[in-house]
Image (cartoon, rainbow, N blue to C red; front, side):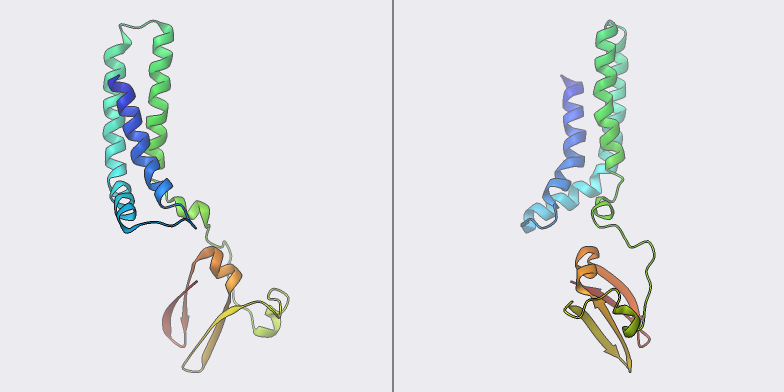
Length: 155
């Protein structure tokens, strides 16, 4: 039973933040605080859970037959998966950064940006840039320098 509790704890610590931080879903301040706390604690907690799981499995190994040993190894797999997942940036999976970004003059952008497309535009010290909303909305943030000033464009 202790091994199953360790499995449940490891999986919960890694999975609860994913459920709370799900994009396009309302979130409360308390839930987000819990999610960020768990994300911060998850790498250490899942390593401790893995160590505890291995210790418990080692202790039970000699008193079980082959089917029990298979179940012990199977119980360690979700802990290992939680350990790996706790170290991933899930938002880069959901919103992958553009592999090759680039800029084009307005005339050349006509092949990519339709006349009716919305853009976010900025002008600083005579330098202007426009960012298509459909791309910014998916990737959420663009870091750029316009007119010598660093800007973060978000939607």
